[in-house]
Length: 424
Image (cartoon, rainbow, N blue to C red):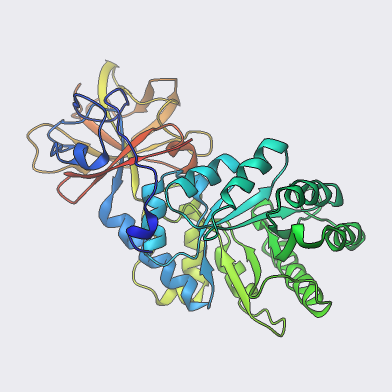
């Protein structure tokens, strides 16, 4: 997607936001980059969330090649970053669209030039429907939401019928005990009847699943095959109102299984198989790294590709106190980084005057976190000083991004080359 086609709202950088260098006034990201900040020169006020330009580019291309190998399309889940400048990079790399979770997120994406949104959620409530209906006045904007009940379809039909703007929907299938989604064939019947009654106001485009609520691969494959079966049945009954039909799934942990199962789907007509991982762009050093190890070891496409996904997000902070042997207190807390799944892990240490950051010892670990402090266990005889800079790898990037209004992107010299604004 060209720069011109992505024209929209302009991001702004505020000097009051954390993790930035000195700025006199609000400005554009380009004006902030013109300040020529360098992380290691201490031009930024730490803690700071830092993205690696080289690793972002690697991950963008890696996932695009993986999806294309299965003849599928990519609609990365934008709720991971809520950063339109990153949406743009994903679209420019070949993404089919952007996946989002709410009407507000959809407004943000549209305002920044995104012209195809798959809202992987049910659209409920008058104001949320009104927001989407307003966006659908743009003839170049394509939108999908999920449905799993007759009540919801009837509400959509009433609102969008009155608005005179049809809405495209995907039937969501879900497993027992899971989140949203149709559980049984018996539950499907009233939903299909409501779609038939909705007329032109609600247009059925395909089938959606979210397999991430399951942990067993066998159960996941069963759910995916159920989705293929239902798409085949809907196609055979002439119920689908979009060509190509849409068949979509895939969070960040099982996208390989979804690609393999959906890549074999045949409904006697064209299909857009759409995968929706979100965390691949920055990856992580925790739960998604563990999932990627499984993929790298078992998936034939991943085995043939150069390298793998690389962690591209770190949070940098200062050592601020060494109050007793074996304990360092770092100015990094729950307000700055995810901690729920796996604690942040010390990865690099840098001291003013060093030639470059060096790897942190493997035995350093975060043992506790407070709002603004991390307790790091070290050995009592190690050379660590107040003012040393530590870089922490993180797990579950979604929960780190939403703690930052601005993240900086650095090159291999740690020069700041972009500033990313988020819209949580």
